[in-house]
Length: 131
Length: 151
Image 1: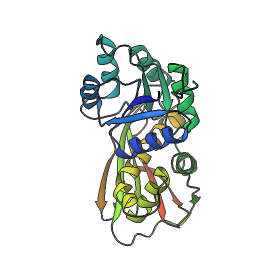
Image 2: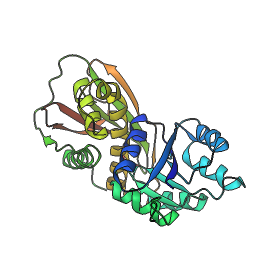
Image 3: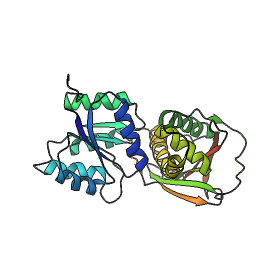
Image 4: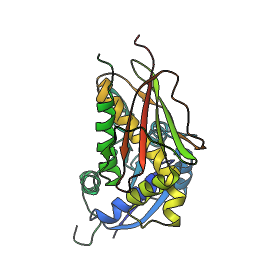
């Protein structure tokens, strides 16, 4: 059974790039849903389950840090892992984001294999039938 | 801390174009000669010094960047995504500049990128340095840094 993933980024180009990376990286993905900011992501997470969230930090309306904080406080969402996919940032900032509840940080630009590795590390599966 | 140099910007721009869009850009010592409207993207940053990074290119070059970033053929979809592609490219350039120039030990913050299609912009008020590279098509991409005085 493939993975259902939520990609959260205000840039439509980045969302398409992440989709492309997911199609190239060897994961079995059933569905990729998208949100343009943290508020839209919470709305979509309220409607359906996903296996993992890939979220930017720097977004209007609700940024990725607030999204992680809100998910961490929500009993329904606190078990859904969040990977922050963002521009290179200071070590303090990375630690801050991880302290808030994100499971990993992937710096842009990234190779598709790096995305696969971080997803497999967190979920323990590629989503494929033999995983 | 030494002042940033055009060579630093050239290196960052070349690396990010290669890693984000699989484009191998060539540095160009000649200033870009714009003919017609240009796409200008801006992003502000704060670190131990604040400032703005600016990326200027042609609409055609922005479509070329979009096509490469998305792995699609040139055409309508690339044209439609050109502006967003340049904004995202500048976002990644901003992060790369902050960590390369200020390092990862100091807190830094990027703003949100904005884009504007119009006449070529005048040089930034406190322009610190700039670089020009050419894409594989020959189209120019100019990256400019406007940096506050040291505190």
